[in-house]
Amino acid sequence: TGEAVVQMQQLFYENYEHNKKGFIQELHSSKIHNAITLHPNKRPAYQYRLHGYMLSRDISRLRYRTILLHREGLAMSRLSNTEVQWEDQQLGAPPSYTRYQPAERGDVIEWDFLTGRHLYSTGENQMPRQGLGSLLRAALEDTVLQVMEMINENSKARGRVIDFKEIKYGYRRVDPMHGAEYILDLLLLYKKHKGRKVTVPVRRHAYLQQSFSRPFFSESEELDVVELVEAINTESQSFSFLSNSLKIFSPFQFSESTREMRERSQRKVNILVPLTGRYDIFLRFMENFEKICLIPKQNVKLAIVLVDNDSNQDREKHLDLIKEYSNKYPKADLSVIPMTGDFSRGLALELGSSQLDNDTLLFFCDVDLVFNGDALQRCRHNTIQSRQAYYPVVFSQYDPKIVYAGNTPDDSSFVFTKKSGFWRDYGFGITCIFKSDLQKAGGFDTSIQGWGLEDVDLFTKVINSGLKVFRSQEPGIVHIYHPVQCDTSLEPKQYKMCLGSKASTYASSMQLAELWLEKHLGVGYNRTST
Image 1 (cartoon, rainbow, N blue to C red):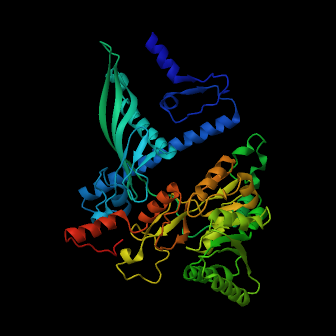
Image 2: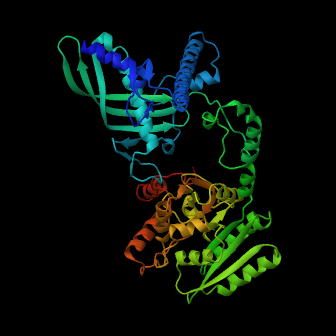
Image 3: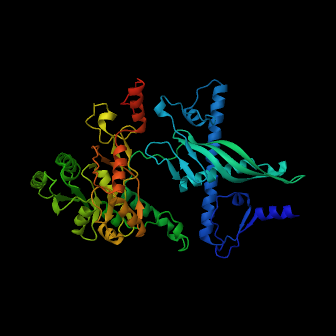
């Protein structure tokens, strides 16, 4: 019968697309899970890929089984009135949206609203609306796949099949201690194939929780990548028996030698800082530079591009300070590059980089920043000539007078909380890139004057040039708060961006709301809580 033919096609999966040559693009699907044979499957590379996927499925099933055992252990401990093991208490609690009990309003984990295409977030420092990223989309697809397999588990006996059509809307959040949580409004297609055949669209709400199992690996201290590679290379000789066609599956294949990795970790970083006026800020920058680079003898070069114009009243003090540090550290590589005319960050950085060789590693920095040695190492490791540029996401401080109610602690620079500051996701000015890659991308637009836009322009050029961009939150760089002054003579687009940046630096939206309530309703809050 026709029904039997369909079942046979599902059980004995055939993949005869000519251009695929047996390659199955999407292994994580119901048609693969329901099949008992996959054909053709002759190439060793595809066989290893399929085998790896099947093993990952076994791992998922076993991890889920451990959660069920923890739940049984918790239930038995309560029934027998015996001591509850910590792991059973933590991992064996039944699924619930209230497993985490916030101590105060600020601890509540917000829900994100989603549709089939967009994510709407209320979280701090997140765009109100953004497209569903590939990771979230994959997580939703995996969640829906598991739900549909559970629904259709006994579909043959029940004489009906339910197909998934789309997610109309939903909510999601992640409880770091317990798991990912979803509330989804699903559009389904109900198909009855016993008796009178019926096909009806239905909508159902799904309340889901993907519980975390216990961690199987923890890192107590930062790994030395070079030592790890050397150890792996030493122990990987046992893979020499593999044929050439299978060696691509060896996990010990590295694109660069240990010597190259060691050279990269010791490469000189050329720090370029555009500067005009602001002597007190520059003094703080140099104090931090002395502590992080000069005293430990870091392999760095500092080039200050000093803009000399009518508004720069501190030029001589800048030069005297650089001379003072040069005399104190005669082996330090410090220089001043003079520049005349109106201040332009892009033009200053273009001028500074033009005096360096093509193979030099550039670090575009600002005088408002403080950084540590770890940030310099990540600049070295995450920037690869002709392949990749590093765009760190910098932590930006809020106004300490508001955050700490006038009692700012001395060591507040590297305090990362929702109330002390925010990750500047929209900023692209801090960059690590090789001089040759900067030239390949087209360099800075030197026609842009004053504040802003030059960083976004270069970022776009870097992507269009074919370079990969490595971007992540950088805990080793902090933008110290300073009042923002927006020049009304800026171009309208620049002025609008400046005002937006200025508004974002006062305090978190939560703290601003608390201050408003305190002022207008007399409701008191603890401003120093995190």
